[in-house]
Structure formats: structure tokens, C-alpha cells
Image (cartoon, rainbow, N blue to C red):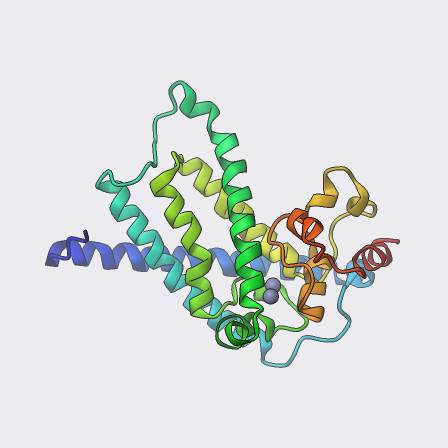
Length: 259
Ligand SMILES: [Zn+2]
Ligand SMILES: [Zn+2]
């Protein structure tokens, strides 16, 4: 249980604030760098790869940054609790890299990505049920045409639901901080890439034996514009298996990458 004595509470609050600042700064940095590269510096070069041609709504970015800030505060709560339990030996997080603990780094990352994908796919489908959608998921879909800034823009309830699986995993699966950092990095970069509304992967990726399992901007833009297709997070396999991949995807990907 939580020890909320005065000294400890102050430590928890300081950790929470530091984490919130770091998480929000990471969002601004990632989204800012991608925005600068694809919408300012090389805007002309990538113009034909823009997926949804309808301009983003006015004031949309301001709303996205606001929700992303709230999401940062909530992710920081989960992070603070994770650190708290880790310091007290309550988690399976390990720091030494002797024996099996070194070679487990990569398979554990792969496994966490698969678990996260599966959890998110089914959570996402549940969030599209009409009642749940209105309460929890509509916020994210306010961005019909997505931007780099959409990548962390979720309703507070959705933010907690998104952070939950990794929080639970640290109690049931041995994970090294390197694995968690790699996971957060993949999470941050793919979310910005998938919401960028500019297809950055090369032509033929959608047919490549490995590339076809990987989600990009065209795939996720179709989710935001069509709603009932393409529910995946990092990978396309659940959409393949459950036949929820948009029938427009292949043609649109080819059109956006033909130059
Ligand atoms: Zn959705
Ligand atoms: Zn999205």
C-alpha cells in the first residue's frame, strides 16, 4: 500500500511533477521536430504524400496540445506509482544484466509490443461502441485530419486506459528499464509518424513481407476519416485477422507513394 506520510508525499509530488514535465516535453519535442521537417523544412517535397487533403480544423492544434498536457499529467501519475513500487521491490523490474537477463531484453520488448498491440486493438474496438465512443474516444477523433500534435491527444479516461497495460506488466513480467525506455521511444515515434498525415514509408512497403505488418500514416489516417477500419496501434495483424483493414488502404498507399 502507499505510504503517504508527509516526507514521502512531498517526494511523490516532486517525482510526479518531474515526470509530467519530461513526458510533456518529449511530446512537444517529437511532434515539433516532425512538424518542422514535414510541414516547414521539406513541405514542398512531401506535399504529394499528404494523405488527407482536407485541412485540419482551426484551433485543432491548440485543443490537441491541451489534451496532451492532461495526458502527460496522468501518465506521470502511473509513472510515479511505478517508480514507488519499484523502489520498494514490489515490481519485477530488474537492473543487473547477468545471465538470462541480458538476452531477455529484446524478446521482452517484442512480447510487450505484442501484448500492447492486442490490448489496444480490442480496447480500441470497444471504444468505438456508440456509448463508449461518446464518453471516451470522441476526443481523439475530433481530429478528422490528424497532425503530429494529435499523437498524444486523448480523453483523460482513454489516457489512463492506454497507460494501464504497461503499468500492470511491470508486476508480472521481468522488464529492464532499457526495455521500457525502448518501448516508450517506439510508442512516441510511431504515434507521431502515424498521425503525421504524410506517408513517410517508401512505395511497396504495404507489400513487403515485413513492412506490410507495420502501420503508417496512410493506414491510420483512414481510421480517422472512416472510423470503422484500421484499429491497430503498431501492427496490422489484428486488422488482417479480424478483417477490419480498410479496403481503400492499398490503393491509397500506392497513390501517396508513387512519386
Ligand atoms: Zn478510433
Ligand atoms: Zn489516432
